[in-house]
Length: 329
Image 1 (cartoon, rainbow, N blue to C red):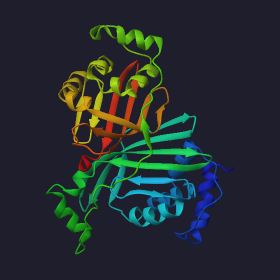
Image 2: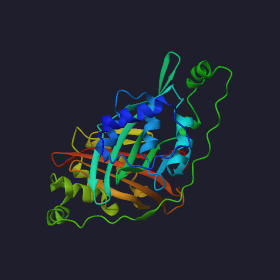
Image 3: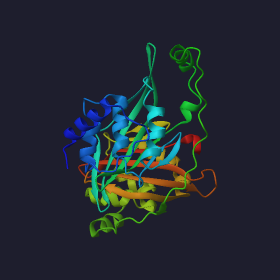
């Protein structure tokens, strides 16, 4: 197995001779999450080359790439035939990290989470687009899963100040209308959290106003147990009083008091949500991440696809984000 640096060198040598969009890479590079992330962060790769290199790392057949606008593509060649023409030449879109990348090891292989803010560089204007998250799973030296989840609603109805700047960049060309939110048959299952530890059981038996910090593994159990993680009375004592943030597609809240007030207002809707889990629930000691499908009993939501990220410090929640497409709700 070569190193990520050598792998990038080999890719650039192939790229120098021309890359067929229908090529099929059959030999795995053997990189886990850390190795793939090194490849994608290599300074020798420009934005288009990063996309080309990523497609070469996707499993030839057992791989999936999901985008909140375009839906799911399966297999290395199909992913490349969509991803490279669609994203390779969009020079005015920039992705800026909003948090450190998280890496996870688990029974199925390794995984990573990247959170980012999209920006549109339109002439002299730099305009914010939605925040999003990329979840990748890696197994046997391949990328098997890449899911980019973000809110497409602001892109479907752009703010008035975007139109003049877009016209300046596009000239006489008219941007294609976005397709409707995609429908994907997700392989989901009821969430099965780890069994609560004795310490967590004791904590849950303690009156809410006397509950203190928890071991991070116990907070993880709370967050991936729907009847606990969706209950503001349970999670409330775990928010850091001042240094906690909750990020949702259309709002952000800072500090335990503001977060609890918001979650209290959402209590009725939250308690009627049924969550099913997509793939593994990830935990690395300081961060939880999981992908989900949500349905609400009143029928207002229908199979909303989302990803949640939660970070911990000193036994408390310091950051949580729920990513999903409000255009699909």
